Image (spheres, helix red, strand yellow):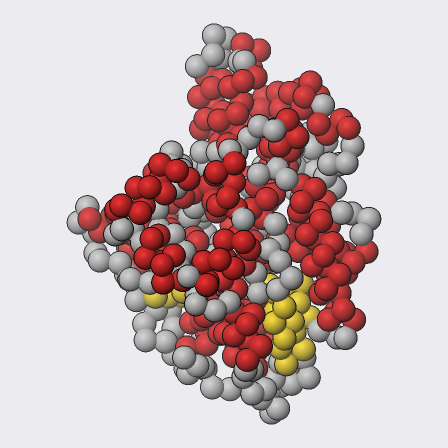
Length: 449
């Protein structure tokens, strides 16, 4: 046996249909096995709040070891995990194929799945935050009212949201578009550049709930950049990828959604279209999580093989056919945050590679967790912890002092800005007022507004 592993990490399918997966005694046995290894190693101490909670729990026990820790104390450790996958992909030396076979995020998922089956876990009101499709459809119809109510300056409405739904009144919340991106895209399409080297490619954009309901500008920028490069595009959005439900341990619902989306996108793949997901969390679901949940489903496997992250697809064009001419320098440099769910795809720093294609533009990269963690990061009791975890990122971004802050994860980008605002109040330079997805900056470099 080697100490650690130099092999590429591999992941086993999630046996969520097997009875043993939900056996509480066997779950506790596995938790103790893994937690003991983590407690001995401590390499992930600074990754997220799960590990400090775990180590304090053990250190403060009677024996200083797991044998005197009550299993009830494990829940706060599980609750702090955001399923970012960074411990598995980056830090842990004991992931498969190492014989110790650690997969900390999927063990946390198993715990939540057991809670879900028992009717425990996240409360009914808090779960409503994760109903992104329902919330998006409703909020887009009343976007003015929704955006007014969710504004941080609206103390009365945000106070009520904190009391009723457990959403921290100080957490920045996404705004809603007046019309979903998929509907906007159906009304018009950018002209395809027939002289571009990549002319002939076809791509279907999986809109994702965030780009569809909250930030259509990501979708429009992606579509415009691809059209400039000769790529014919269609926009499809059957439903959310299920990441919010995965975080809650509702694996059966994720599997149901995966089958539906794979069936619809599979028809486009058969017609020669690539699939481009506009947000890295969703690309991660399509490429990796769905095939681990449904390992025997060929439609899901076909979709995984055909899926690209948005930045990854532009870099692929640049490397194989070459980009269309017309890129110009941006008005200043870029601080680029590499999102955890982009890193977890194991494709390299594609956003950085893409932005470095823009001439005479300085790109300063930050490769560390923003601390947000999806719905986790906006909840009362988590928000201040999320800011603390992301403080090193905010500090690096402020120190870089560039006019553009970008992250492939829109939630991470907004969270970084909040961290920068907090530091600015302490006397640091004033941060930029907005953050962008890198594809939006790339579109600007093409002169596309």
